[in-house]
Structures are given as C-alpha cells and as structure tokens.
Image 1 (cartoon, helix red, strand yellow):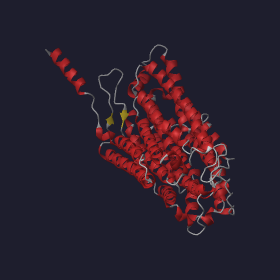
Image 2 (spheres, one colour):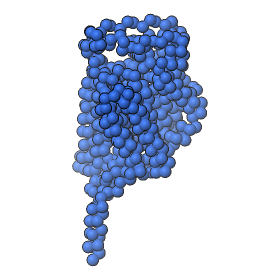
Image 3 (tube, rainbow, N blue to C red):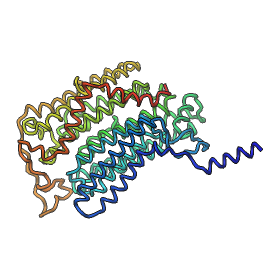
Length: 545
C-alpha cells in the first residue's frame, strides 16, 4: 500500500508540472513582452509612431524592467526560477538563479539599454534599419544578457549567450549603407560564432567528465573528484576551452583582436552598449560559472586566469597608446579594463566578487559619458570619432567637454572618481587573495593608461579648434553614397548650431553625458552606497566560501 501511495504521489507530482516562480521571472517577462510590442508597433507607418512612440515604448520597457528588478531585489531576492523537474536526471536545481548578483547585473543592462536608446534616437542606424527592429533587437539582447548571467545550467548558459549575441551581430551592421558598419557586423558574426563554438565544445567536455549540466552538481563532482574515466584531462580541457569562449565575449587578450575593428565600425550607440553591457554580461557569467560550477578546480584555473588577466592589461593599454580614433582607443581601453575586472574573478572570494561587480558599475558610468560626447560630435562633423574633433571642445561645448574629461579621469583611476574606488577595491581583493603580483601589474597598467587618457583631456582644453572637413558629395539627389565609398551626403551631418548654447540641440545626449559624469564624481566621493549595494551580490554566492 505504501509503495502504491508513493507511486501515485510521484505521478501526481509529474502531472502537476514543475514549479515556476513567476515573481522572480517578472523582469524577463517584462523584457519579452516589451520587445514584442516594440517590434509590432514599429510596423506602423506614421513617422510620429516610428520616431517617437517606438523609442518611448523602449524606454518604458527598460524602466518597467528596472522597477520589477527592484521589487524582486527587495522582496524575493533569493528565488531561483526555472522549468526543471526535480526528479529529472542530472538536474540538481533550477536552470536560472534570480539572486541579487543577477538582479544587480539586470539593472546595469537596463541602464545601458536606456542610454543606447537615447544616444541612437537621432542616429542614422535607427532610420536605416527601422525603428521597431533596432529597438526590439536591443531589448532582446538585454534579455539574452539576463539569461546568460542567471544561468545555472550549461544548456541555459549557451542559450543565453546566443540570445544576447545574435541581435548584436545585426545591430553592429544596422547602418546598412556604410561599409564600416557592415564590416563590423560581419567580423563580429564570424568571431562571435568561433567563440560560441569553442564555448559549447568546452561545456560538452565538462558535461562528459561530470555527467551533469547543472552547475551545483558539476561543482560537487569537481570538489569530490567524482569524474568519469579519463575525466581529469577532459574536464581541464573543457575548462580551458570555456575560458577561451568567455574570453572572446569579454574582449580578453589574446582573443581581443575583433574588438577595436568592431567598436570602430559599429554605430556609436551600439559600441557604447557593447562596451558596457556585453562586457558586464561576460564577466557576470565568468563569476557565476567559475565560482559555482568550477570552484572545485580553482587551484587549476585561477593561475591560468591570472596570467590571462595580466596579458590583457598590458596588451590593452599598450594598444590604446597609438590610436587616433576615439572608438578604437576605447576598444583597446575596454580590453585593458576587462583585464582589471578579470582579476576579481581570479581571487574566487566574496571580496573578489564584490570588487568585480563594483567595477562593472563604475565602468558603466565612466564609459557612457564619453560615448555620449562622441555621438554628439558625430552629429556635427564627419570626423567626430577622431581625437582631432575634440580640439577646443572646452571652449565650444563646455557641457560636453566636462563629461568627457571626467570620464577619462575616471577610467585612468584618478582619486576623487569612482574609477579610483573600483581599482582600489580590486587591488585590495588581489592582495587579500595572495595575488600581489597581479595587483602590481594592475597599477603599472593604470600608469600606462595615463598616456592616452590624459592626451584626450589635453586635446579638449589645450588645443585650438580644428575646422570640420567637408563630407564627400552624394551620388545623386536624396541618395546616400555607395557602400564602397563609406561616406554620407552632407545633410546627414546636422549643421553645428554655433559655439554659444548650441549644445542644447542635443538635450538627450547632454543628459546622458552629464548624468553619468556626475555619477563618476558622486560615487568617487561617497562610495558607501556602492559598497552596500554590491555587498548583496557577494552574499548571493556566500554559501560557496
């Protein structure tokens, strides 16, 4: 009788289906619904709808997602959501972990998405590719990032990286009549596909060695040495390939070669989004995978990651020194910054997690302010992406010059900025984790970076203004130049409204630049709110230490 009763209860359990935590999933549901709505509304023909309603709905979607994330953060922060039947073989927990580490990164992605919408509002890319398509793909990329950093399962991890990557391949090529944009999209597609293939092969080897796709089960198998025959070599090879796959996405040397080219060719708003949100997603996945699934093999992968981080810091900073394109310089700078953040993953401690998340947030502030200035300059002159375009900016556009200056000083780690606080925390984590040599490399890299960050500041305030070059004529009335030429007709660059008050022609860009520059200073002087906020992310994985 007892056996029959147990069998009946088991059958009822399976018929009832898995438990789904809808409250914890609400941020993802908001993004999904908002992305579909934006795509549908973008099909309407009136210009008012496409040019104003669609971006407005996109902004509303991100704001609603942030609101849902705040609610879950305060009232449901330990929930794990998913569709995993507990009795299923090899399934130790839900495939998505909606904890405070994930929620903090969700907020970061949404803020980066908001800034990208504002920066692209008057851009060429959103007009050429379609307002609904452009903004819808942006939302779905954020959705993929959320899945990626919440993944507790190898299959979910791969689904997340594909969902975040495929929209970005298209967005990079969204200026369909410009050769550089199309080249950027193609390069990112090829390199991203190689990175994804490498990652999935590494994940397959880890599954073969441990017999499970669940992070918790994999971590237990590695800690206890319960591996399949020949599993030690297999799991170490899998970990190495997984590091390579993550390194492609995070722009970690020597897998960074695509970054400067893609950053330069992509629309600047998408470059800013990739530089902040995509890097945060990759580092967030690094944290969860290596501090949950691979924590049992830390003695093997930590020295490897430390070496890669040191190489990345040197390569990124040295590569940025000779760049004249601001976007290429920011690309190489992003490589170096990835090395800084990777050093927090190496430590594998609560302090390391907190320092990494804090620096990801600081990096968002420090990057978006300069990119907003670059977008504003590109609206006014065809060489707005180059360092020479910033000459005399302090006299011409002080409301843009100061945010650019503050952003550069923050990235350099000057005291009084949040960049200094972030680097100090990373150094503290490295020294506490017995990686003092890597902390010294970080300091040396920061000293090298002064060579190109301060060059931008000197150009803004010490060099006289240079007249903008006249863009090449179009091929015919109302037509854009052919793709091979890569130039746009003259009226695609908005006429500069003059040195006095002209910056008000771009209020959304001024808002982005000033708001994030102010955050760089505020949290550099009063860092306590950031410390308290990021402590929750560290506590989300506290059971592992």
